[in-house]
Structures are given as C-alpha cells and as structure tokens.
Image 1: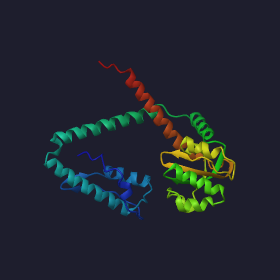
Image 2: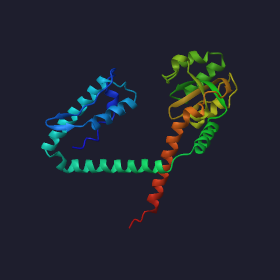
Image 3: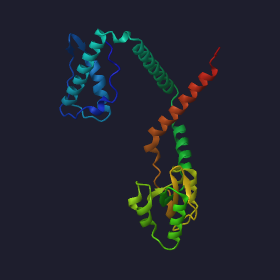
Image 4: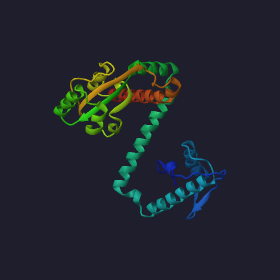
Length: 260
C-alpha cells in the first residue's frame, strides 16, 4: 500500500519528546507499516523543529495507524473507483508531477551567489537610504480629515486626535504611530506624502487610499538601519529567484508549445 501522501502539516501536531526514538515496523490488520514510512514523517517533523524522542515516535505511529485503517476501509469500499475520486487523484498526481518538474529544473539551474548579491543590492536600493517615523489618522471621509488638519494647525495634539478618531485599530492606541517605515512599504500616495514632509510637519491635504482618508505627520527621519543584512536574506532571496525563474521557464515552454 502506498502511503507516501501523508497528511500535510502533521509535524505541527506532533508533541515534543525526550528519549531517543527507536522506530520499529508494525502491522495494522495484517498490513505492515515499515520503518521507512515512519521515518519519512519522523524526520520531517524533526526538521520542522519538533524534538526527537520516544513521544514523537508514538505520535507518528498513531498517525500511520489511523491513516492505514482508513485507507483499508477506502479500499474495501472501492472508493478509488468513484469517478469524482478518480478525477481528484489524477489532478493531485498532475500537481505533484509539475511540482517535481519545477524542483528538478531548479536543481539543474541553481541560483548563483553572484545572482543572490545582485538581487539583494537591487532590493536594498529600492528600500531606500532613509527611514521615516510617521503618525497617521485614518478616517472615513475627506471632510473629517480636513477638520482634523484644521484642529492640528490650531494646536490640537496629533496623538490624542489619533487615539480618539482613527479607524486604524492597529496603532490608534499609540497615537497613530507607525514606527520607522519606508515609502515602498505603502501605497504610492501615502509613501509620497510622508517622505515629502519635514520632521514635525503635517500634510495639509488628506491622503486618499483604499482604506479611507489619512492625516499624515512626519515625526522624524534617519539614515536607513533596519534593512536586514545579506547573510540573513540569502535563503529568502534564493527561493524567490528560483521560483521566479522556474515560472519564466514554464511560461517559455507553454509559448513554444504547438497548439492545433
């Protein structure tokens, strides 16, 4: 019986253990569950952060007992012969084959260290060399925003108004403080608004986004220091580049296909 398609995410449900695990083959209704089948799940769980040990071994065994029993029942009921199940199995098989094709192509066309550094430098440049400490007040209408700007210009405290009126529940309790941010992290209109201000200034026109109307204040700015260093980003960049390249390769294959 092929039980390679084990429930995804099983590692997250596995409890922590302590002693060293000793995997042993066992039988369920006469059917053998091999050490290799257990080890595949066990190793995956450990790789995802679960402590190795006897308790983890028991959890893996229980998962495979449940799966084996249910698959045996599915076989008795001839579920695999149902048309909708056949279609689902074929669709899953196709997805696995395409995923395997992608992984194989990436192995044969690895991302070089030079490409990683080039992509890192380009993204760091796009991040910018300045970070901005920004407050904002989000309201539903332009008139509300204009009224708040008038009150601020007459001496009202920006932070207190944000706490009282802002629709952005994520930061209203902090007086609308967004912390140190960069323009590219936000929609262009919002990013352009705060990056054009001087420290202490409030934008004199409401900024409209898909969320509503914003009153924006620049508290301070400084040379960028939050962008992560190259070593911490290598794996992320490698995966992103590999994904982008394999998609481009697949698109090229589709373009070259003879469709009649």
